[in-house]
Length: 262
Image (tube, rainbow, N blue to C red; front, side, top):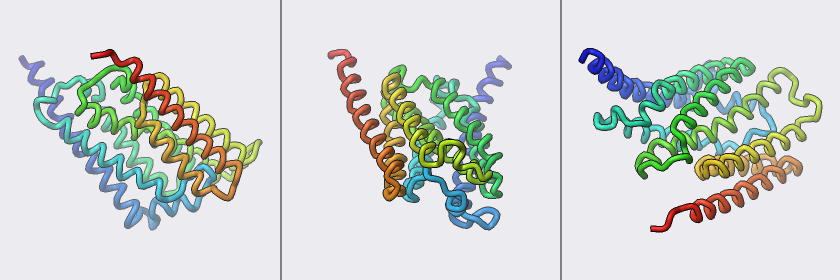
């Protein structure tokens, strides 16, 4: 009885912790993007350590979509009847960990500790990968509402943080004066785009994750727009968009073929 009550209390606390964590992340990010932290807005730091992999400014509006989707998750997990839902047990305190890493990364970024921020960004990426794999997104069927309010938010979030990690590493190299490395920035940028497309293809083939693919198309389109005058990068990004879109169509058709007849 005592253990049951303790477990019940733990599940109940988790719901409130997730809500509070979400609020803190949104508030801190809003302050960073508008008023600024350490005298700088988030975008100004990105401009200071500009890289060829960074997309056009409008692309970062995806953060608003991510936070709306995560609000849906936070609200969906709150009713008492879902307190012991399977997705709750699978995610556990990993959402809290993602929020802590998000905020701490932002502070390092604003204090221009760019190289150190890469460590936290990789930590955030690994945390989201853990959530993604624990939820078995694309591997098992769930109710439509759970798919919309749990799976889609973490697919989109993971997709964007995949891109953000690449951009963060590139910015760190710029901050260290090492952006050229051995092959030159243009070549490295093109290679990174190819790797991102390959990862997306893997996600489409193994999990048919259209939300993840859509984020990559959004990011690559933004790179094309920003680097339109730099042909090698622009055309590689555009080719990446085309390949991911074709892969999405094939994945959708494959999914329809695999669907059992009624």
